[in-house]
Length: 251
Image (tube, rainbow, N blue to C red; front, side, top):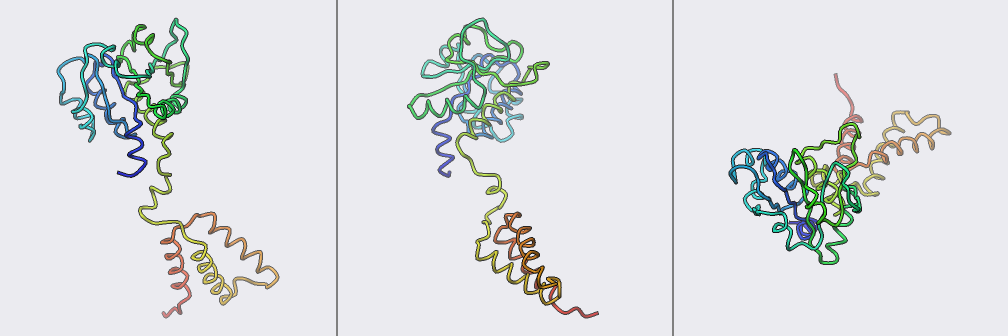
């Protein structure tokens, strides 16, 4: 486990699903949690038998979260050990509460962790959301900015959105670092070696002509390749291409 993974696991908030009715949504929520480094799920009176195969099927590799999920009879029991609590809702409530978007919540969660405060996020049942008593016990309301003509968000989607914002706030790997698959950015020395090789061959074939235009042509060519953010392996491949094209052709 890398340093960022350890940090995420240590700081992660608890996900509390209150009276969830569809096992598939519980499984999909576990899958979303696993995607973004959340590991602790608590369930308040889930409908039907628990655990069940429908939840496991939709968890898609996140079965461990379901296996370790704790069951509670009341919301109060589920949150009794938490210092900070946030309630998700899609509708306005008749109460004075701070309202945070998921990105603001993510910053708050990390601030709480820095103060050694354990946080939890409440998600209500699919059909009705949280009741007012659960919302009243929270420190703030969480609302996802959506199209006002259609505010309904699936339970697992809500978990995913909030998990994504929390994960981003932990500075995960940049996407280009992930997609390089073990490679690394080409060094300045490697790029200059490639440029010298390419320009030598372009001189030999007469491409960099006339002489008075050569400096500008060279700059333009170099700009093309520096914008590409080449990896060390890509530079080696390009040098191989230049070498191949410069060999004599026999027909």
